[in-house]
Length: 448
Image 1: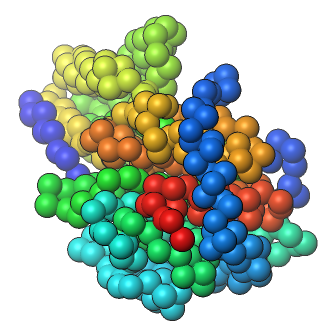
Image 2: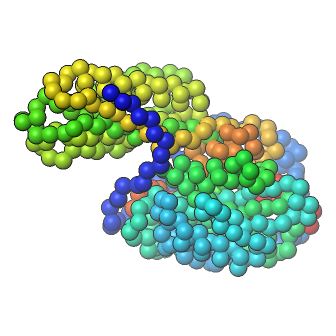
Image 3: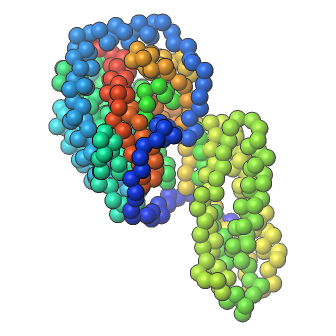
């Protein structure tokens, strides 16, 4: 018997190739991560409210806020153009090249695509003593070949990926344009980034690369993802993801009867895991689990040579993630042992446990300046701030103790990660861009 532990990244399975356009409904009115939590109204220190009010009154900032309104049609077209460039997992290159070109056209000082495919545009500050990041992710969950042509009905756009996170890319670009058109100088350098690998098995690889040991200095991190203006995500939902594969010799269902059967082991592993996980998740900090994909086998009259599943486990507590992970490992080994004990002929069953995702948990104290400013900008724009938890690119800086936040891109959206995804232009669309602008300027510092 062998138990091989592998740490690899896997591709995404194909999805359907057509979709129907649904009508927006109140139930779909907000595009948020399912992990987001609702808390009581947070405390905002008066000094940060006053800071944002003073910032918004600066003549250049007032012009920039108005520029965002004037750019609305252009921002919408940028949004559509980017949506119609496919960005499958691990294949974001075409969209990345276009986004780099758009940043350059908008007036960024310099732009490049790094070793893993992140688009990075640098706008130099007066001192450059600090670096603030404004980021949205380039990738979508949809595989190569998915139709991404945008369909419009009134103020609503329909296409896979139109909300998550293509709208975020358009917001980042709009903020850069507003700052450039009004010649605002910041004290800190600002990096405008389109990151790769946020979704699924991408496992945050783009941002993990940004925060590598010899990576660029980053003092403050602002990610734009999801809808709305209220949300201030300051906590990261950690997750472990595995592909578990049982492997045997396979054979004829009758002639080779008595061989180990991978399906038998997989079904036992799932049963043992969910029974124990159900008990584990009924108390303590919220923890979730899901067996999302299973596969294997060739025909009804063949003993399969392999049987596999993909499992997702999440919590904002690293200890809880580790705890439920241990339950999965124990269930797999119990199932392997029992199937090998039942065999009548042939070799033992083997199992491979491959980690395909590891998103660290972490948080930023609500009293930190970045979070206070994010809440203060929401309040200034008449949107009651709401703190929450999510699984986003900010997980990486959260886990490293670097001030970070994920805020919404505005508008209303629904059908995320489905072929029926939609995004609705409403009064929150420009408000969200204004919020991002004010937050970036507050973090980067400006006196003009």
